[in-house]
Length: 168
Image: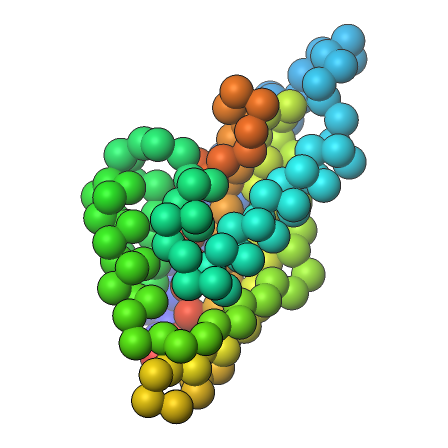
């Protein structure tokens, strides 16, 4: 386990450093009237809540309405990088098969406003899924989501989802 941790530590440090640098460099000039961190945070949280509502309705298409149209590795789930948006959408649709009800909840979502058009949301949470067989499973997860404002709408540019190792 120590070896695994030592392999990931430099990468995590690099990501943290890049985000800190991006946040510093992306600060807009004081005259930029679009840069309102509290309003951006609120808009990102509202967008994410609408995404979560779509997921809880098991509506993959509505969920993906909030995801940017790009084919550049926008979703990572438990170590799997989906090659394009369509592949990710198909995986979500397959995942919803056999699920009768889902309740996904974020706990303590934190938004870091990077610029007027870019924000990072991180959180942990739980998903409770009831399958058509009647079996119910509750699972913890962690998520980091990068939102981009494009044409006035906040869209998911990149999402990284994981389940803690002790649950696999």
